[in-house]
Length: 433
Image (cartoon, rainbow, N blue to C red; front, top):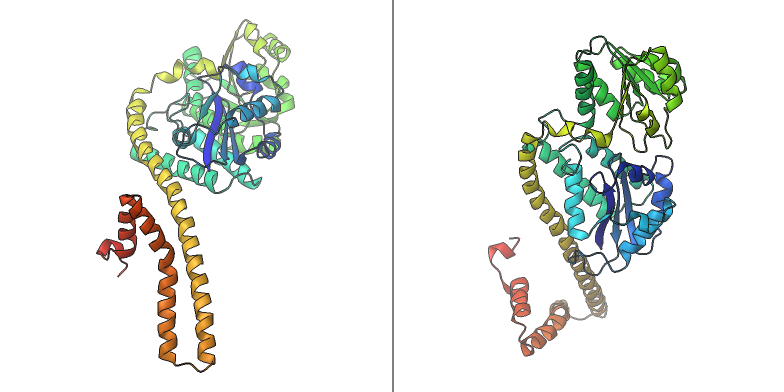
């Protein structure tokens, strides 16, 4: 069994293409059940966020030590990925990265730890990976290998946050959005913010705004109940998503992050809001992929529209301490990658032990059956016990003896030494006594 990752992120792919290749909550289950049917794929999980879309797969492989994907498997995944989104494979050319077995293990740990994020060390990706794992588990597309990989990655991410200063500085896209708002408006005491969506990113952004003494927070969401629950935390106001146009003119700051496959805020709605505001400026941040705010909005005067890609310059300001911590994190990951590989290698021994025990039980059952028949026939018990001991010894040692003679003829000293260690050496390290 071997692992492979095929993906794209903010480093390799522009926003316009990322949003076309993102999986939505509506089609993710369908995608998982389709991906697991690709020839050679035995397990599958999909991580899709505003900054990355990645396929994690377990494949049939006779040589997991080979870090190159099985021949043709990467191309089949590319064809599936492009086909699912209705694109030609050539559209993805130059944007994808493909990791073989060992690099997939390392990559999963780096992603979970926030080392591969636009915002170094940001914690949200761990939750997003956990959600991807839960969905794949529920759909039955995750088994022993991917299950172990994701659980191991979550454990590593926890250790990285505990043992390093990777999360010590308040740096995230939500924090960056708040920083930009302060640069534009200065004091936020008299500003009103409209938060479109009610997920983790929006909640984090709202907390940052609250810490800057924002005057008013309006939460707009498709589910009014969820909007109300979040708004209550900030003494804010909740509205239904379809009523954005009725309240947009009140907002000095708009931060959007929903899972909608189509924009929820169009140019016309913003134009009408600007007229009601007498063209007082609106600062907008679209953190969603696909985008929540039509790109054409950026052409309007008095609107400052930023996407996740535009925040890159802002989010580099507090990264120095995190970059130092990242080096420590990579050292932790180096060690944990080897732990995972040790676990996988141990599975071979587990299978051999199981087969060995099964063979031994067959021998024992066979000899015991003969011994019981001899006792039933009235043979001397001491003779029967002696028969059992000699017969079992011969059966257990016949195959090893044959192979060791052959090893001697072929000068396989390594095999002979291994046999000595397994079968003869009685040192404390080789004994349970």
